[in-house]
Image (cartoon, rainbow, N blue to C red; front, side, top):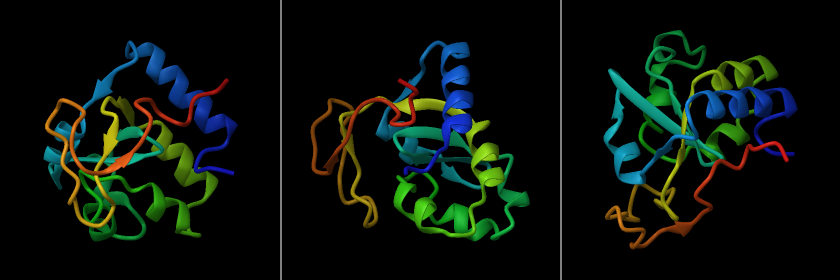
Length: 132
């Protein structure tokens, strides 16, 4: 099924077009891992959740554990993420990951030196939540 329904995908696609199809490297994603500057990646889409951290019903820590990382697996496994939560997240879209390598999910052992080289799980360079 995937993380996002058609409505969320449409919102992300709209924002992507409005922003000019923005890209963010994994190196830049990794740097944005603080409460005052926080992004997460879900389905190769980057979401700026900085403004949402303090309102997250599951607490700030659950977001901050995944700050600057690929949170797809964690987000999708959480049964508590309602369609409303997914809609809220979709509105926080800022870019697609622009690297061909995703850092490993086990704590950032994969490295991206900005040249698309390094160890990690291969992924597509664009958000998987695109409407076809």
